Image (cartoon, rainbow, N blue to C red; front, side, top):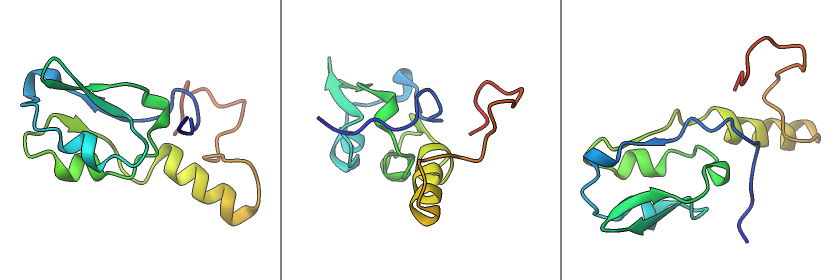
Length: 100
């Protein structure tokens, strides 16, 4: 089982109409976020995404979008540096539903 990161904060999206089924996103994703279904990429578990940007950089058809370096990846790095649980610096009193 691959790790899940922070729930509902990943900026990852996939526009299926632009996907040609090349499978590069499946091959480069270190956490198995994508799989092929019916000849096109499909997001299996968005919360596995650490927003490294490998899928974005390898999609020649602009089907994948992700703001690399924000959300889960930044939260994990911040937690490792500070020796705390992953956090993106959001407070529980934040008015945003997802400030990452």
